[in-house]
Image 1 (tube, rainbow, N blue to C red):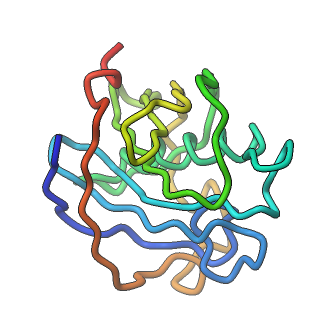
Image 2: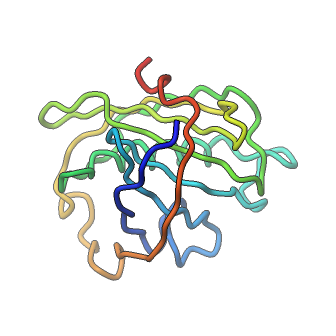
Length: 170
């Protein structure tokens, strides 16, 4: 399913997933799409491996946590911290290969919101799936150091062909 890109989200400075200044990170860019989905195309570098040629499960989990959690920011100024993250590792996730990760919010009620996410390869094979629960908090309660140096816009544009959007509703 080809979804229209609505806007690009900001990046962080040192985040392991989106941090542009993190020499060990992935440096992923995130985009808001139609149907309230957030998506990214990324490659996991070899310094984040588990077994040779395979991404570490913690990195896979971090990517799902990031893409699901960012979906709450669509049309809102909400932020949250992860309360629970459940990941199903479906197939080995290769290194240095283009991957597509995407997620959406499935429940939003006051202080709690929940979401689902998927990582797939360019052929549409599901590699990992996740579900997460977050606690809605104002950004100043999450970090005292959050400012324009830590969260900023980096120009970019991307199109997405998402093959398993229906799985987000399971």
